[in-house]
Length: 334
Image 1 (tube, rainbow, N blue to C red):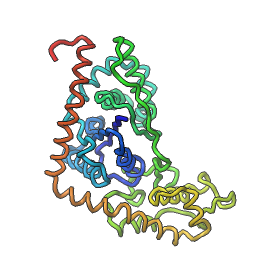
Image 2 (tube, rainbow, N blue to C red):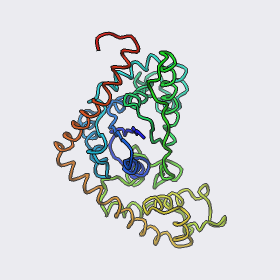
Image 3 (tube, rainbow, N blue to C red):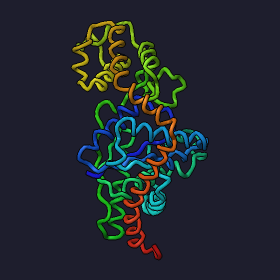
Image 4 (tube, one colour):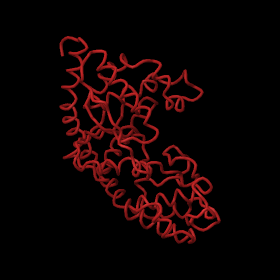
């Protein structure tokens, strides 16, 4: 499989980003050709402070490396260093239909009531995402629930291009469905996703948190007065006890066990005992990642060299595809 995926450099990477995406990037390296991108052009579809954006691009790159993405075997780069992504996106702007983009629920959610004030880039975001994948002829993309619709659009764009020009240039992309830990919920509200935009830092475990911060946040995580769910109807369900089940699912993901195993181990016990065990496994897994990120953050030159090397390899992958597209479309001089 040839795999492509990307992460936006919007700061405060957290446990949800790790369990839902970056950990899977590391696992997918085994036996596959992987291209991992810091999608900085996607980030500027909403306004970004330039200094913060530069810092966040390097921080996401550091997170990739600290979690175990190998820049020698995988291609790691930031999107803006490979112009073919934006160039193919313009071609796809001319292939995709307005009706397709009007159905994109994520634009409606992000634009909210002020749709007329949203940037054109935010509206056309899915076309750039399609270009990111197809400019490398990637065959598989790891996706969470919120990206499935965009992947379907990328498939439609690939199919329409192939049909319009009577070629078989682009593969029809297949999703790699991420595991059950892809949806990590807030530590303050088990019905909402863990988010970097939540005003409370106690709602999430940041990848750069140290051991004391991790332990304190789990200690203060919202639960309820009952013991840890034991799997019986009387012990409650994910619907009736969302915070309790969220913590159990986080434990299972970090301990590499099933939710059923976690319930067998802790069901019926007090949350004080369970939260200590949860903090211990989180510190063991995330502590080294945070320490390595902090070390790399102090050496931006190293991160920039990794990105430059990755960009050179990504350009070598993308340029022949873009040249073929220009030739097929009928453009002259490339």
